[in-house]
Length: 366
Image (cartoon, rainbow, N blue to C red; front, side, top):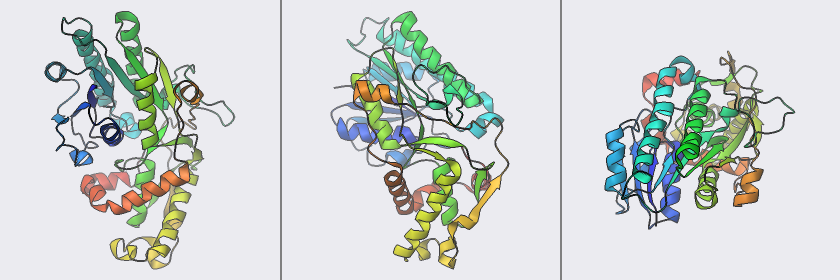
């Protein structure tokens, strides 16, 4: 039985992981630490707080005394570190918060883990600090370049990516210098339930249902590898259970698509959905399909993001060969599940978006 601290566990990927882990490891004690910034939402964990083995703590990973007390009081032996500022556009305009959380916050966790697990007389017999990172630390790819592997040199191009690269290096350093048991996973673009609508897929779904503009950066040719969030959680579980200490594992979806193709696919899926479920017209009266229009008429090309990486692609061969990882969802099945979830949870995404932020989101997404 593990005693697990999940940082950022009320955010998109973190909450999905907590749900996934709690279902598959019901005997484990799980503590969620989350600062509940704009993208963190305690409702993402609804239904879990009644479990005796679950505890939620509202707090910052940079609060060293708090983290120290959690590890000591709950006897924690595993940290799964999701907490991060992750919106690229925000990092371009407000980089300080990314350095504070992603670099300094990660270092605080590492310091506390080292003291509790290596320097304490009451240290657990085994421990693990698992760090969740991103493919953006590797930079950008050309059309014919091979996908990122664990040996790809780091070349971050945004303040967000640079802050995550720095945190990756700190985690590695604490293993090689102090002997802390660590693993790191670098993932491709996630999508699925509970994703805050600042990201491409949920934003396009929300805007389309509301009859709002669908902003596409540049000419829409930028390519990403898309990973359904539950497949990501499955990959992290494999790294925790089978990964070699001190090593990095890439977790990808093997689903490369240009942004414009993603948006067009969403539009087509919604058009078909309004035909097969005519009752949706009463719920989303501003959707183009209600008026007999195609959803893709909302697509609007906007000024490209500064320093916009052209292509990301993850080669997950090592994770597949050594851990037995393989994504269970292809893009069509994952997108169908995501659209269905967004429609069924309209009250959730309307509640997490305030008016001023909704206006900003109409022309900005990650």
